[in-house]
Image (cartoon, rainbow, N blue to C red; front, side, top):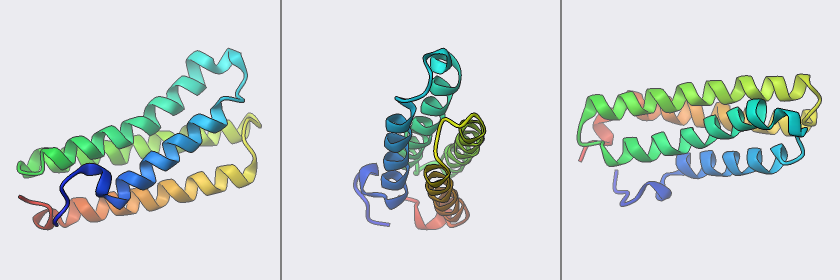
Length: 123
């Protein structure tokens, strides 16, 4: 793969946009959720992006690359759980929930593909 920076990766762009959408929607969450649900969902969604970038710049080391992708996948899973709680508490609309869950399904799929095709990412 001939990418020079992590921002060029489609999966990073999807993750960044999803995290930005989560930030926007969580602005409306009740203030009593500030240090629990709001903080957790923002942190996990941003962590997906950070781990993708970290994996990209360490792709010379196959084990490290795969480990960081695995962490990014796990953070996607955590974000999906917080979205479940957000919907259950009526903090987000069903449409927003569905769109974000679809986004994270696509992100997870792309990360799994990268993980399984490690030889394409080696320097």
